[in-house]
Length: 364
Image 1 (cartoon, rainbow, N blue to C red):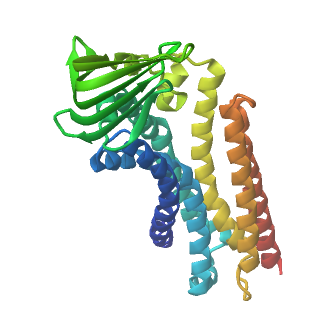
Image 2 (image 1 turned 30 degrees about the vertical axis):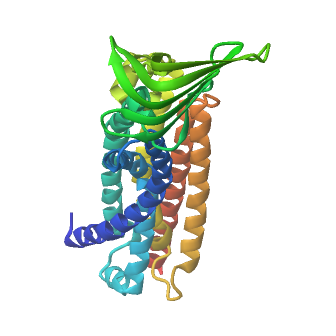
């Protein structure tokens, strides 16, 4: 690699990091807002949210590497013109195609980054998030230990605790249970305590009242008690039954066909991952060629910037729609290579245009 190529490659790193941080922050924030709601509803700490936030980063990064690579290539190509560096390069005999070589190397780096993210890191982080969410849901005591909030661990049960403490102690307990057919039971107690007995989660109620309403006859009966055990195990989810999603599986596992998903679903996910990496390889090349193919222009590259950005946004939007259709098994997985093929044809057309332009200048 020539000194000039290494210089351009180094100059690409800064804009790429900037656009990556900006775009990833937007995607991450959108996902983090949903995680905040889930963490708060399950009574978890800020440390749990930070752990979730870190695990969400690979998902955000894989969505924006191709976009950040394209934006960085456009920015640097235009910057080379603005700083008159492009004039020096062309005066020294550097053709537009030769100037694109470091952008191709940079695209290959983006390709390798996405191959690692999509095939290894993101499935791993997504699986950890799914496992942790399932564990949090199954930890019913922690989920319910929230002061002064009405919570519904199931459609038929509503609970309220006026006060809670770290030892599982409760105060001002209210339980409304509508799970028993024609009866509606309401429990009030001054204090309570979470207990784990023989693998079952129970709530020990002390000094309270149990009201039973027969919904058919309208008859209400009341029972005062000093202590009463309320079984919460039926409301607790079984974490062992959680089924992994296709995005939580590594590509090797998908290719081997060892999962419970259909072959179409498995290969559809693999095609998405590979096509995204190839797409990220091509986007910096397309961004650079879209500007450099015209050679030096005194009036600048504003029109090239607008046209290239418009074409890229259209292709990226089409790729996003195809992804959703493939996920829903409406379209087969190989259709994900259509945006890649379109981008390849555009690059080929720009290369041919640049080569023909150089021949005309040489003959003249």
